[in-house]
Image (cartoon, rainbow, N blue to C red; front, side, top):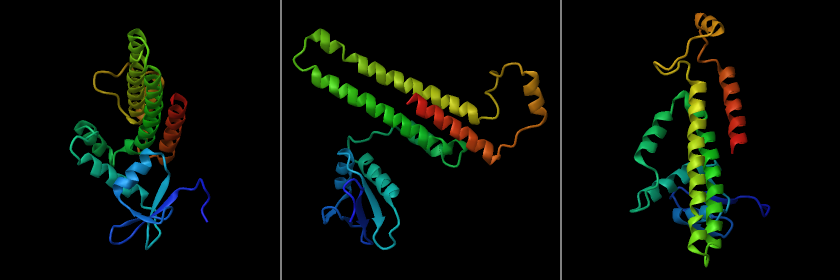
Length: 202
């Protein structure tokens, strides 16, 4: 028997029906979306093979929501950029960046909601102070972009044209013996360093 804090198991059958083993009822993608909003943890498994298919099911939920009128949340430039990262050397750090950004955004959002609740019945001057959380969100977004740009520089072997400073002697020596871009260990070390930086900044 599953422990109380264990994720609820959702089984997906060949006929695409979803079965909630916690409530012993069939559910829809909309039901799963509501579970996510309520903070309920669940794992989706293929009923036949037992494979974890949570990722494609969550992706399908986003697809369904994005296709509802007035529900579009992902801007086209973001979708284009996200698609462009697939197969790119940056793909390995994009998930961590997006995850940390969403965690930071959620924390600021929760603070904003709490302050909005406390603003009921207060004077207009106090309500004007509600702009502070929005500034905090803007500042967090700016920091996230700077962090991502730093990550881009870390993985880009050459600086943008016209912006490269004069090479130091050590840098000149490195140019004579170019680094291998496919050095897996070096890439892992860089990713680990970026993860530590992301954890610190979040």
